Length: 399
Image (tube, rainbow, N blue to C red; front, side):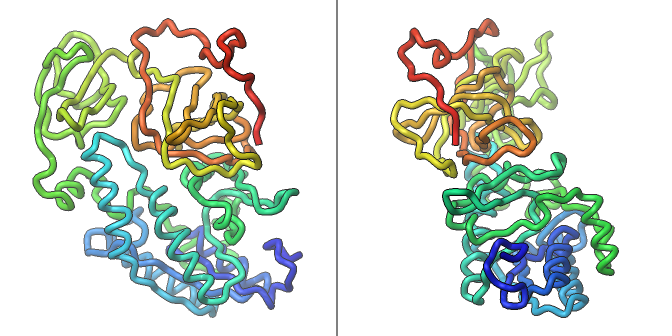
């Protein structure tokens, strides 16, 4: 087996590398080329309408395409640029705007990975006769005893991107490779210098690529003219406290910028798109124990069964650590019960499930948060599913 877990010599292994023009994907291409693999670089043109062309920290723009091309020339590998702007606009940008208008808080990077990078690009790699598709994501895959590959958190906890890759299917995982998953970012930059790559000190991308200004509401208003409408700001009892210029300007958990003077700190606890209302309340109303998921992608060894309850670790935001939770299947997805409440859980975000809360945990899957049940009091006991007298089946371990 070679370093990519294939029963071939590197010279007989064709690898397509997704080259974004950044340090990480460039090092992947250089590393694999140095190991003797046949490497082909592909860069996706997703968004390049002028605004992002020369902005530092924005990916998939004109400068990034230029940088990827320069790296390919340095490595003496074939390089192709594919124009996916139309598909990206329909599959990612339009859904992003629609989700915000529905009162949700979407994660466009998840949708981009699901609909573009690991769908369209993966098929292109197969069309080119590639044995695998490699990317610069910080995540780990390993062969599983029962066959297929498992997905795990990266060695660098500050760079771990498993939260954004939970929607990768088992079929896609078997074709994907992530050579940087066991490396630390400083070591990757050192390799970039050793390979003589001009982008060795290039800053990491920070912004959503199609929101180079950071003002996502402007993008929504451009994509959906006239869809952003004003409405009332009300408290959790229904009392009108003020007005807003559109629910897209607010997110669950927000405290600043509400423009209210009521003598106590208030937080956005819900966005009601149907009524056009921003509902605010005290911080304790942000606490969430029960989360309903749809669009669930499951990567566990055993299927989610009927009424069975499973012990997992749930991660409700990319910046938070996985925490102990219980999982059970539902008719339209899954339900997650957090053993300790989380604040600021919003519909549209992802809830990613792991087999433990440890740094090398395996990703079991996840889904899009459809609803988050909020208590009316901070006096919350343990979830009913933890007590045998409720009749709920005992929790099982996964995978």
